[in-house]
Structure formats: structure tokens, C-alpha cells
Image (cartoon, rainbow, N blue to C red; front, side, top):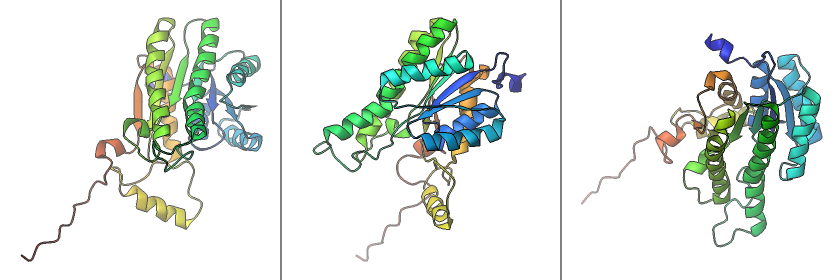
Length: 278
């Protein structure tokens, strides 16, 4: 019974959109959702990456994957993404707002010198796109009748101070707040909204021995004593998109190997204090 509730193959088979689904955590979630039985549409700006990811996802599920090149910063394109998906599959059940640009824009800048363009782009890609996707999906869910799932991807940076990437932290904190409001707003229509808060997760497998060693060194400071792998986001996404989580809405699920629990400073180490000779 429990495993049945985790299945997404229906009837009817669930249809899921994953923005930023052509690589990294988005692709990992798309693979898991496909393995659980969902029809998949992935969206990003880069056609070549979409085509490569679609082939990889199909190798796991045996079903074709719809790809829709989309600039998530444009609300009209997000509306068109939902329309294209519904035209292809006949319905929409799951909207995963995953697209983001990380904390690269303006990294290292302070409140004194962060450029307007860096602030605006970071907020737009990470927060505005989530709003556009949630709005377009909710409108479609309402047309279909009760039900629907919105899953937004935030970041552990939203839950702690980050002086070197504060625009990104602000955007992702907005995602968490938006998710809670969506849950309260849409509960009467049986639409659930939750967020995943990842941290200390590798976006892709290590490419060489040097990367393996670098990740091992970085991971030893985390509570779990390692970095997470992208695939580990997948089972959590399946749970939150399935009937197994039918009573869960408005929540934020942290997946960071205990990083936030252990604090910003490294865990498992004892400071060394030199004894005074006096």
C-alpha cells in the first residue's frame, strides 16, 4: 500500500514539468519522477542540453520526454510552457520550479557595491520564475478540477546569513515564503505546495580524481562527513509529488546531510589552543 502511493503511473499517469530539468538537480528529479511513472516535460534555455537530458531520462523510463526551450524569466514563456505540455499530454499534475542561477552573479559583492543588474537577475531567475511557474500551473490545475502539486526548490542559503551571496539567499528565502503562501491560498482547491531546501549537494558526478578528492575534503566539514549526490534529491521529490504526501503542504524539506543542523562552522573538530609558557 505504501509503495503504491508513491507511484505516479496512475491511472491516470501523472504529468510533471521540471524547469531547469536539463542538468544537475533538475535532471536528477526528472529521472526519479519518470522512474516512478510520470510523463515528463523538461524546460531550460539550452536546446542541446535539453535533448541530451531527454535521451538520458528516456533510458530510465522507456518513454519519450517533451522538451520545451524556455526562458523562465519571461512570464509569457512560462505560460506557453504549460500550454505546450497540456497540448502534448492532455493535462498537468506536477509543477517543479527548479530553475536558478546559483550565487554566481555578484558573488563576493557587499551591500556597498552589488550592481543593480546582478541583484535583479538573481531575484528574477530564482524568485520571479518560481512565481510565474506556480501561477501558470495553478491556473491549469483550476481548469482541470481539484488537485495538483507545486514543488519549489529553495536553498539552505535562505536559512542562514551569507555575506558573499546575499542576493541569492534573499531570492531563495522568498521562494520559501511564497511556497507557504501558495499552500494556504490553494488548499481549498486541493493544490499542495512544498519546497525542497538542498545544500552541500554535488550537481553532477565527479569528472576526475581531482574532483573526487576536492569533494571528499569539502565533505568532511559537513555533519554527514560527505557531500550529497544529485540523485538523492529524486526520492524526496517523488514523495512530495505523490499521494504518499497527501497531508503535506506548506512545508520546507531540508536535504543537506545535516549541514544546517551542524552549524556554519565545521563539525567533528576540536580547536587547538597553544598553552602559554607564562
